[in-house]
Length: 429
Image 1 (spheres, rainbow, N blue to C red):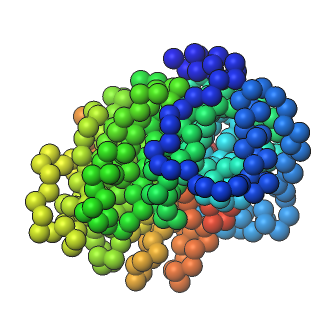
Image 2 (cartoon, rainbow, N blue to C red; image 1 turned 60 degrees about the vertical axis):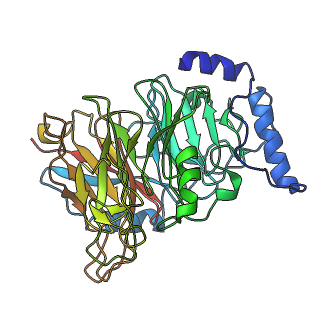
């Protein structure tokens, strides 16, 4: 139970498993050691002496430029899009379940908090969260229903009970679910596909996606990756114990969410590069039970075989995607629409952030897609919902990276290139 986790963390007990790989040798730099000491102090409910992080300006030329871009975004009739917050490098969004404070992960070294104090649906304050902690690619952020924030880094998982109520101080209650170097073997750390995503399941377990670092991995890596969950999704208890590999055969998933209807886990998957402009497709997948295999690396996307494994018989029982998405559009964050503000046709469907292609002759993506989910639980055809961040000349004005349903039923969009959070609302009848 997460209530037990909260009590344990507030008591100052460190959680987590032993490292999977060897730790880096040698003396750490003074600043790194200070930040490691700061995390230990926070676990013991001690002050670190860290100064408050400076505010990120929310007005001026940058905000004005973002609003000019938003004037070019096309939406269905009755919808509008506004600038919610300027947030540098904004990637994954976690909406606080109590006060609606946003926690925004990045692929760099910071997690940001976004506060709308007067509730006018425009942020008043953006600051770095827990500035004393030395984060490394803290892309994944997620909340449990009772207010425990989880942050999944490249090779560590941290937990922050009552984060919405501690966040305004540099010192926050903190716990370690997976120690540094224990999420994946340290020797497998890479500069590629390192942005983790986390979600808290209806079973109370923490789910974390682990992208594998290759375009297509060599055969000698397959056993290690299957055993540790690299190129898959792992899950663990709320205290970090009883970790297991939940799903395999996934190239690089940077978006997942649980269906409100049947509690199955749906996730996007970025597919193999370098196979041509129009192949293979991206994927929207659905996991209905533990132990399912989703085809990679024998399949590069949908039913398209990879060149590297075309002569090898794939394992039997591969689960193919619920929906095929445009090739190389880089589908990242996704969320089931659980609000009531939007028209009924959107309720229970899925919004997906397409980051945009980098290896296509004619770029596509940089938009929000919508995928309806039918009553039988199957996905309908994906359609564009919000687009215009990619110009006809192939210039990116922004690159959506994640979506999240806000407490009022509006849709939040993170843009890591422009450094912003947008809010899409419905004003039609």
